[in-house]
Amino acid sequence: MSQRLPMNSGALQENFPEVYGEFFPRCELVVSAPGSFYWFGDHADRYGELAVKQKIPLRAYVGLEATDEPTWTLADSIFLVPSERKFRRFSRHTPRNKRLLQLLADFAQTLGMKSPYRVHTLTEIPIDCGISSWAAVSAALSLALHLKTGIVTAADVERWNSAPLEQLTVAGSSFDQVFKMAWKLELIFNADSSAGAGVFAAMASSAFPVMYMTEKRVDAQSAKASNRMPIDFGDEYHLLDHVKYWGFRLHEFFGLRSTENWPLDFGLLYAGSTTSAEFVIRSANDAQLALKDATESFVAIAQKKIPDNHETLPPFLMRTRENSTISAWDAMLAVLGNTSIEGVIAFRQIFDRGYTEKAIDDLFDAIYRYNSFLSLFRVTTPTLRLIRHYLKKAATKEETTLASKITGAGRGGDILFATPLHTFEHSMESLLKALREKVDSRIWLDYASWLDGYEELGLIVEQDLQRAHYSQFVSSGGAVVRTWTNDRTFSQIVGLDRLESSRKSFDLFLDAGERMIYLKGKPLTSKELHSRKMTTAILRVLLDHLGQSVHSQQLPASSYVDRTSMQGKIIGPLREIFEARTGKKLPLSISGGLRKNFTLRLEPSDLTIGMIEKKI
Image (cartoon, rainbow, N blue to C red; front, side):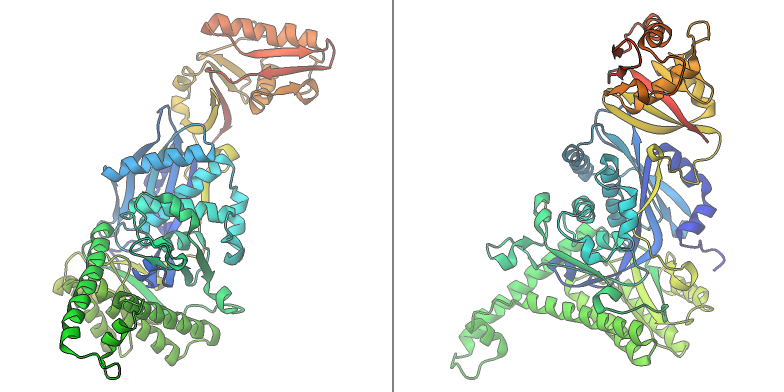
């Protein structure tokens, strides 16, 4: 596997430090979320059936950058192309972008955010391959929005990683709020159709399978309470606020005391091409209509040909006579749902009792049958079938067993395969070579558990400049500069080579470390201001309490203990020099008694004020 990149976040960061080094310094806040694949539940979960998801150690990073733009904007996305062994940059200029930006603006208004941001995206997860890349982006973006408003804190995210999912999914909880907003975002990326399973898996910490299901959803809204939610929500995002869902870690659901190490290997093979989820979902919807039309047409003819004697009728006519509410499509979905349940029971046996041939056989049989039933959705292709054939043949050559299936939307993307431990450790490279020669030269190993490891954590706050949390990719030779203007504040990293020119853009700029104050980029001298050190310290306190009255006892200790000396030596001279240099008034006031009982106040304004928070 000499030409293959290790496919986990740590290795990719080591191999591409320049990519991450460009991304992180641009962003005030960065959140990441992992990708995931389906063991079971592809497509059927859109109707409420059980989904079983597995995280992989590849992440999507979403960063927020403060800008002067009046509206939310999207920066170019950066994404990994494993087969090319490099990251690519692309502009996702689609009609959906407008809807996404509008949704972000609506969310920001609902959450009380005072200013728009530019959204940056970097994903290690191959896109449109059925491993929930856009679900991970949506989860990370939703958390970033909630963090900016203070509704959710980094401590909350830490707690999510250990708390039982039954506690986290309570309606209205912080986890639930982030999840529901992320689900709405994913709808835009995913053709207005999403079960929410990929988002949930990205948020729920676990190195082992995560189970997820929703209330029953139908192809059209129904007045019946049992069928109250549609499969596809369109732009009616508010409906998601009322969807009932459930999620469990495998060991929580079955009450297992612990989960053992994985007794099998699994991986994801890129089939050489991708297709849009929108196309596949439409194809699946067409299949449902075709089945309905075929059934109704056949039944109409059969009813004329076969007398109704109430005793001896074929089952399909019995169901018609009894006015069954179970359609042929519902029956097929039930088969898929039951197969998912069989797979979960097999997982329980594996992790509860350890490795047994029966448990592995049961799991592999469920995977095989689930893939067969997926043909209902028209998601397979000759290429996908051929790859699965050669995988099976290779396992037979190794004198072992194997299961494989489509994962995600299908008709391209990745194929999941699972084998007993060590099956392909030494033969995977030759297998890939054969697949490229016989099927498609673009086939690639996107992920292998024995090579790339596992992922346990869900959401991670990677960087938050305002809370002094810095990524390792924020290198030395720069400064974290905090800006106040109007009623908004934000932080950004400025290189030391740009710091001098940057200071000129501020009406007032503080460098506490150097005890310097700059007005329009020009420093104040000790002759102009009696004590730059104390003035800087006082302004820092006032900026932390912008728009609030600060009592003298809250100010740094100094010789300016009464109002007269404070006004004569600090406040008055600073206001005069500021107006003379900038042509603007500094909204700084002093009030109260003449001795120690006075207050200072700096009002929000259209001035641009900056301060170095930390040099790095």
